[in-house]
Length: 201
Ligand SMILES: Cc1cc2nc3c(=O)[nH]c(=O)nc-3n(C[C@H](O)[C@H](O)[C@H](O)COP(=O)(O)O)c2cc1C
Image (cartoon, rainbow, N blue to C red; front, side, top):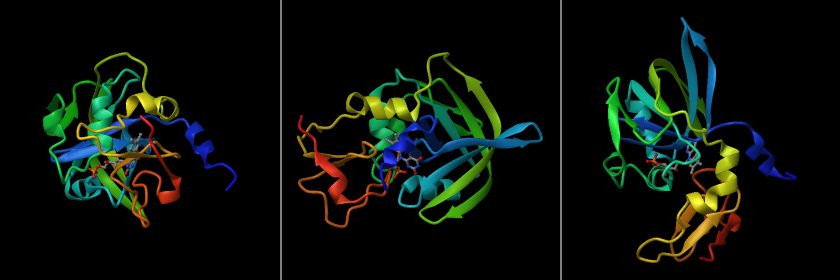
């Protein structure tokens, strides 16, 4: 492949995906049609993410649109931690809409009823019919390209206990630990150890 970074130019946004028990940051989101006037939205979730299981077990999920001015803590909590290990929702301001938690510090939310799940190998593409939605703020949505350009500011690369941070050069995912394991695969883009560079901070 000559340069996979061309995928950074695909116009797509950055969202929090939430279910009752947690969720994660997603960018693989698309409006794929209308069903009886209700928008159909698809979201692709990696099977290695705990959110995949949460979504498999839920009838409903929500997507909240992040703004360019979002508190980076939201990206850190939802994009670089696992819902299995921590209560992500307890760390951010949120409220319930249509029986699904949605984040307060966003441009708005879409609450979806799950209508289909398509197996795409490493990922499942969940499709939802929008049953509720609202605009909370008219700020500028964060695009994936914006995230890529600003990820150094949006992603904290040192922890309070000074663990070493390794940054995936393709997507900005940060692995914390003395060494990236030989067989490690980035949970966001799937690339291996040689793609991670030591963060000098
Ligand atoms: C900007 C950004 C975009 C991401 N996009 C996706 C995505 O589209 N699908 C996905 O499954 N994970 C995506 N991730 C990765 C998950 O958010 C991340 O692996 C998270 O820690 C999973 O948490 P969980 O185990 O609680 O589900 C993205 C992360 C970031 C920072």
